[in-house]
Image 1 (tube, rainbow over the protein chains, first blue to last red):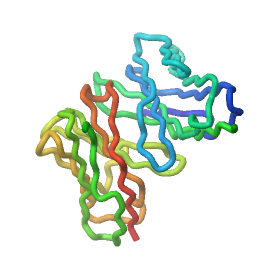
Image 2 (tube, rainbow over the protein chains, first blue to last red; image 1 turned 90 degrees about the horizontal axis):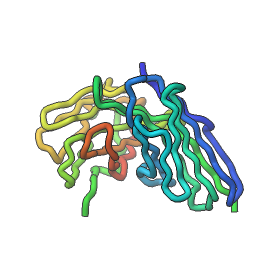
Image 3 (cartoon, each protein chain N blue to C red; image 1 turned 30 degrees about the horizontal axis):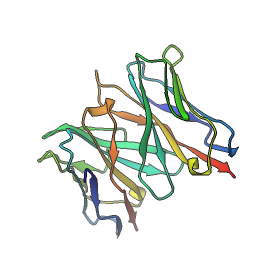
Length: 113
Length: 113
């Protein structure tokens, strides 16, 4: 079946450093790629998303890049802060042949002060 | 306040005792979905619904049922729960289907003994 692989599973960075999380998807029909942040004990919340007709999108310290040819997309967080510590999930979905959303397994990010 | 609600938030039950987890949204969203979250596996989609009376299987539908009789409600039914259904369950909804922001409920932690 379709799947999304996410790496690394755990990432530890020093405050102020950058963090990069990478995802690879298998369904070539996928055209929407959101990233969700889940703080401990909370629900996932969207932080940024990108559609297949765009190669890069930025929102303040967060950016996402998409390479449709290679079927991978990445989350970049610059100038990390302790409040960035959370689990981050990537996902891939499409709205043509099916309506599923496939999530990656998640990356636990630790930002050390 | 725009929100997705789930009840109950916590539930401990025994094998074979039918249960229902309710999900309700007040945002007039057409798309609703159920996920289960397990350590190391991320969020896996159980069922989704594109509109009233339209439901379809996600990646892990075995042992679950859903119904969508009203736009705002999307209950998850476990007819005969088993211990391998012990998990954290999230309901989510979105306006534009799978290629739009999904808003998650607070989660239901289910333990099946």
